[in-house]
Image 1: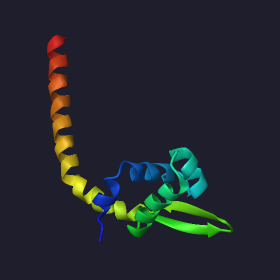
Image 2: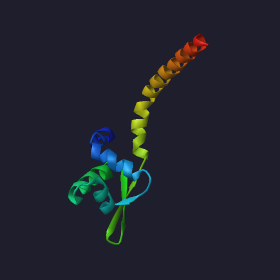
Image 3: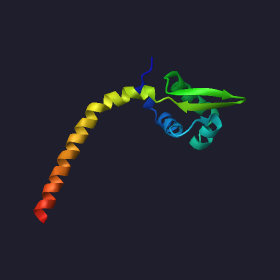
Length: 105
């Protein structure tokens, strides 16, 4: 079983998810936008589909891919403690800058 982290370690797959974030896209559209071959794009899409990150819908001869954000919750949960760390540090920086600003007046 491949983890969401392992799947997203590949930059092209992250780019595909970025492209799917706003709207479903056809394989042809993804191929043209990414500048990859159709087989190469399809391999990445298969990995994303197997990981549950995208769904595919057939419409006549075309396949439309759409982002499934639910599996990204694993990454969101992992990042939560780091967000608190960053938030605490940014708050401390803001307080420091406010003090500097007050001292310069």
